Image 1 (cartoon, protein in one colour):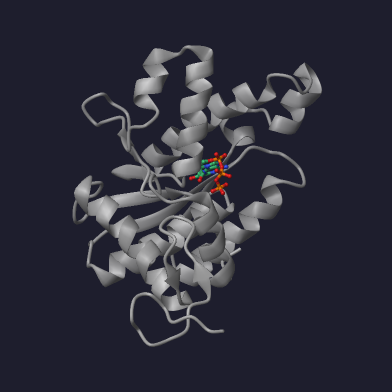
Image 2: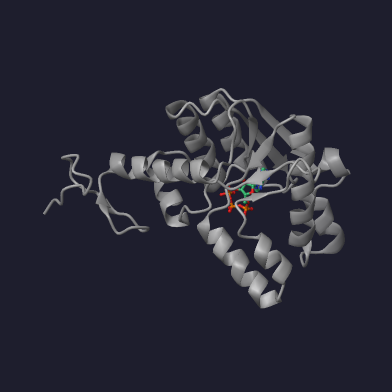
Length: 228
Ligand SMILES: Nc1ncnc2c1ncn2[C@@H]1O[C@H](COP(=O)(O)OP(=O)(O)OP(=O)(O)O)[C@@H](O)[C@H]1O
């Protein structure tokens, strides 16, 4: 039997939100999901009007949803942001080359500037070549360090005020558990910050607008909006 959408819009519900348990129709779910991200942006004062913001775009679901929602909110609430896309091509055949096609699609759909920087041009090495040299163990460590640096280099080249990444609540929970298991108290404190780096510290600030978004809901949003 059809259940009415909890928001009282008069439509039938089609899902139960994992985060709140509310039964909602598709449109009210989209609105609730987007409004929560807007509230996070406002409460945490993530951006200032006129700023140029790079969306760190991997072509995966999180950053694809982030690019979409940031465009929606920038228009709906007049943030006045200049949104651009920044992608790092690690040089992993059959993986990043495919997902970069999604980023190119985002560029076309939203009319955003896109810059792709590769490990090859920055470091003279691709991840494929690094793995061939050092083997598979530890290569994630190299890749993570290189990517962080590459995003910073790209952000400077694009002259942006800050970089927004698609890290979500589940990513942050995983990082917390990992840092507890490692006993890394310094990282444990930092890893929950919604904003890291600052111009004063000579690093381009990073922000996580999806910090409170559940992965399950990001997947549902991407699926029902047909984003990936
Ligand atoms: N190659 C890349 N180029 C640009 N940004 C990246 C890249 N890889 C990761 N990021 C940024 O870092 C965030 C977290 O990356 P992670 O590797 O944990 O991927 P993820 O959680 O699967 O996210 P996604 O679904 O966006 O790939 C991404 O959401 C994205 O904003």
